[in-house]
Every structure is written in structure tokens, then in C-alpha cells.
Length: 140
Image (cartoon, rainbow, N blue to C red; front, side):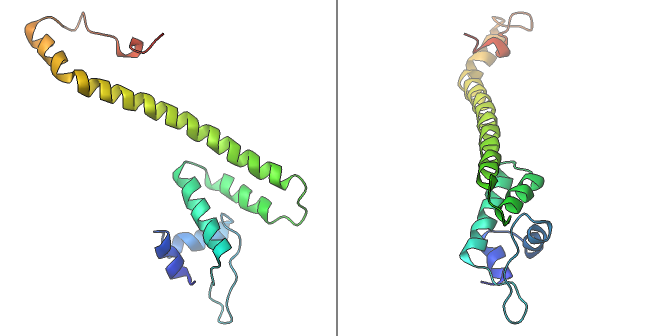
């Protein structure tokens, strides 16, 4: 597969794929007899992984470290180091998801109680001095 096809496949630009290869986010791609990149399934897997991890917030530097580890000739502790990078990213992503779920729950609550809240303000039942403290809403 050529670079244009690979870029289209993953909704990336050709420049992004060249950049990923140049800085080491993905390992070097084999070239055909004419010198053009010829993407194999393993290359496409790297692109997919890089794009997915970037979307999840993994830094370019961490991706470079991960890809560099994969290319080391001496494999001792490489797998452990790669797994640690993935574990760290998973932990970070889980933290972000927990935060996003809290915000989602707050938005759902606000939407569910919006009309009642506004009605209570209009009748004078609620005012700036006697409203709920949203940050205390879910404390146990």
C-alpha cells in the first residue's frame, strides 16, 4: 500500500505519516524498488496504534519511546518497558474517563433539574443565598 492509501485509510495526511516516520513515532517503512514507501500490515498497525494513542492523549515523545523500544536489537526488558508505557497511558486515560463521567453526571443532573430550578427561582423559593452547592452534591 502506498502512502496516500495509508493516509486515507486512517484519515491522516501524507505529511503526518512522513512526520511520524521521520521522528520515530512509527518504525521506518520499507521502500519499493522505485524508492516509494510500501506499507505492510505491520506498518498499518503502527499507524493505527499511534493515531489511537494520540487521540487518547499519549504524547509524541512517549510514542517515540515506545516505537524505539520495539526496534532495539537487544530485547531484554524492552517488553516490560513497552508494557509500562501502555499501563501508564491506560491509567491516565482511566483518570480522564472518571473525570469526564463526573462532568457528564453533572450535566445530566443539571438538565434533569433545570426547569424545576428555574421555576423555584421565579417563585422566590430559591435565590442567590439559598441555592445548592453543586460541588457538595455527590459527597458521601
